[in-house]
Image (tube, rainbow, N blue to C red; front, side, top):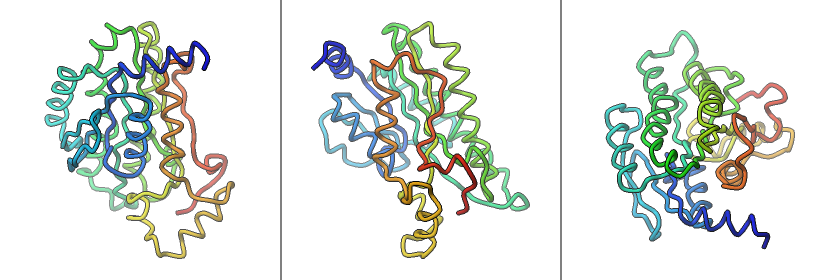
Length: 252
């Protein structure tokens, strides 16, 4: 094993990471990859679950609730001093423009934009002290536009602006900020829109250049790249892990 790899592994073993939406799907896969790499992990989700691992800590919080998010962020910062954040929690709430509810737009703004801002702010003291930090936001291929996704695509696109701004502000502190924009991934959220037994699943897969739907581990591996201590020269970037759908139109 190369010296840089050994040093990175030792560094990771001393780190605490926050994963939002860590109970299922992409979030759960990310949690598992982080634990395997030696991190202490704090998983935030609407519903808490039994940790199942000595280095996994779970917290129940509604990240659409700004006050609850601030309280959770302060508690995690005080207890764990995390320097890595992977903000994965998200909901779609699809609607055509005429039917978009302002309450949904506000909820998704809180969840997709305000929550990572609040969590990153709480992490700043620990990141400054360590002169190290990794901020990874899970956006969506829908940031490029998708019918019925007014609130979702707008707030997911906002994440791309966050990481570009944070990259400029936090680079001198040794902190990187990057985004991942997944395409269609087989998760409960995907199947809430497209039922698993629907023939549309196969139709969507056939329309993806690589010929298949994504899996949670596809996104987790990308997240681990951005989170890795040795990848400090990559910041302000958006990686489309989408099977090629970002190169053209996608119909769901």
